[in-house]
Image (cartoon, one colour):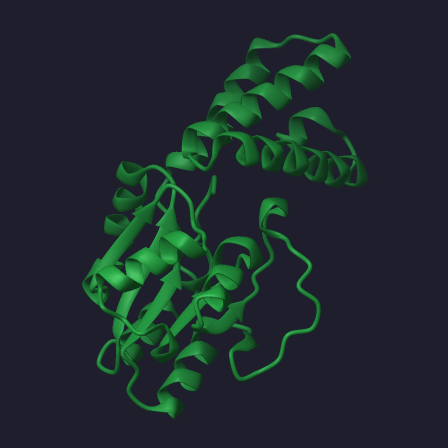
Length: 225
């Protein structure tokens, strides 16, 4: 979309940040779903084109192609399969993701990762209350479990609020997920660079009852939030 609306790299970077704020505001209002993300692209694009007073059918076709990316198969991060293979014998693995249930389950099937997980939790929203309910349903003790995720808002803070140990795998992200939490330190919180580091840390600790992974950073890229 940025390539359609801006000519220079600085203009495109500014436009991406502006869209990120726009989409984050809509997510606060109506929640997370692929439909929201595609609607945000269309609305933002229409607003910008209206300001420029230009209309082009070819650009509209390109816009449709951009929104279709949301439905494309997800891409695995490097080291995902080998790390999950190493972890699976030592603890129960759970995958947690938010959004449209049908779309998210299809993405998990496409990756071939479902064989590693005890369960895939698809929830409308990730927060401390939802996480607590899932842990209780599986009879998991929070202090014996790990959370791996990227989003401070949706992954890290809900886990810390429930007493889980957290591995913060920061791959960058979406403005909606950013949060200022100050300086965090072990033993409950650690930053890691990749899923391989996650596996090494947990395997050094010995067998663990459960590890909850968040889809976007722990296993595969989730286009469209």
